[in-house]
Image (cartoon, rainbow, N blue to C red; front, side, top):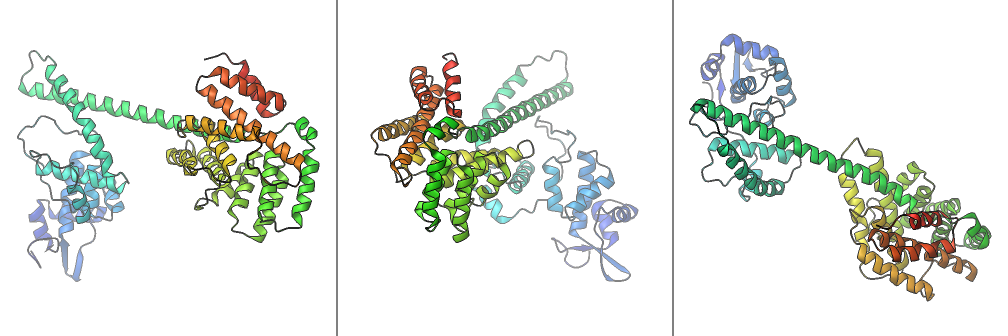
Length: 493
């Protein structure tokens, strides 16, 4: 052996490598030609030196041949993808990426153990692992401990936290006890010792395959539920926006009043509070193009106007302009402003992203983020209390599985209803008292409709019916009026 006699810096002439590994000189040369081994070091033209990695790789070639049905060329591809790093390749083998079902025998026989070359895992990871209970079994063999450590390292690289395995391990203890009792209880008349071992191993493999199939089925079902919820939530969010009927708009002279308000605002800074109030009024009355125009004017003056960006996203979303709504909503990803309109635009952008990715990627995290957004609303009322209340209610209507605060939402809506009736609620500032009265009607419809939906979800059909009847009285031809009719026509639960 050349150089150092041991350790990772050891080098070998080919004759020494043959002696150390037990493979022939011709086989070493074949491994080199096939790409299973990296080229030898060439300190001078007539001298080839091989490293400890070459020795480890030859051992891994044998392991792959024993544990998988990969051809030598396939093994060479695996080795090349791992840059011929023995530790990476060992992790690949441990993680069963290339396994063909060679499960371990669960019977603790004293057979010839598989020689382990020792994984070289990062010290930081081993220190983190030592702080868990994942490798603390007193009777656990060094080989088992190394295999578990390797699998946990592979999981760590895949982004799985160790906390998952600690929680899963606690649940597996009961399952393992149940399986052991079942294996012992099975009657095996006439079987000898060797056949009994084979039978136990066979039954264990059947149970393992069933557990894998059942686990996969449950995960698929839950992911499908996420996909279904995302589609429903996106539709419900957009569909939970009140769109005044033509008759309502005519009766309240909405187009003329909005035009007059826009003329008044045009002489001012469009990014001011007055400009934002105009955008809000436009959104509430269904004047979406005017809302976009006013908000874009504000953005031209101040490109960092997050509220104007949010209002444009919402106006596009209400018109089902999905791409535009997503474009503007995505600009708010890092926004730390908790204004209800900004939160709602972020919510809409996340749901639109879910709708785009459903069936292609795991959208659970997006749905979780969307569901948690409404929790960022302040606990104490602010000057935007009405919008905060409606957003909280809308979140509970759109995706109740995530936004599970229905009692609080109902209580807040009932408080808002009292303030609307007492004319003490803060609304967007508009130029005329007539337009203010129209805005109060819109907020009243929102409040009653959401109360009706949440009461219906709680099974309180009488309270729901009372709310829906009032919605119909205010604007029967609107989308909320039509839905209220349908809700009243549904049988009581």
